[in-house]
Image (tube, rainbow, N blue to C red):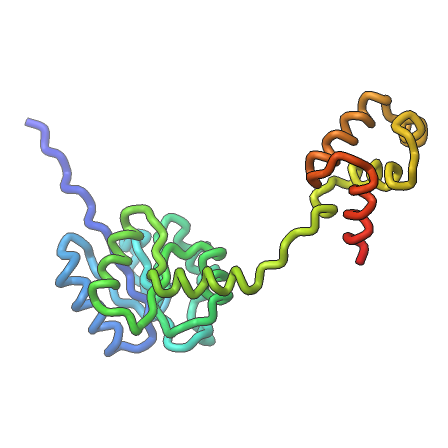
Length: 218
């Protein structure tokens, strides 16, 4: 008779320097995620004091200010230490660029402390299901921020260094054969560059190219 070992329980680690807040969050998680082992810790060192403790499946990184406290592990440190863990930042309302930066550093979810319990549970289940989580309100907030801060790319910037060189020769009035001689490239190569340049910036003549490159320099 084959006896299969019981699957390992997922481990949820709460990193929080405030014991009372940490305990309250742990009680909530134990009530709603009975299958998980909930571990309360001040920081990475506190969590790792138990030598047999596995890498957490989920780290809930609690912040009490809109910055990382001195002596408290940073997201980068957590990501380096627990590369396979999913990470949720649970903290105060933050500026959109800060939230974006956290996601760039590898967090899987962000939840405001003003969110209700049901959203906390949705966030955890989404992240544990392999998704990223950001509440609808913050998603709209960040979307508006991105629209307001977006600077359209100038069409001339789409060209590669070599395409820009050929484009400059074209607007100077040089023929494709003269450009080929000047650059040491085959005539067919220059013709290919010319077609690619026109396609990239959405034009069909050198006069329009000259206008675009002139605007690009302003």
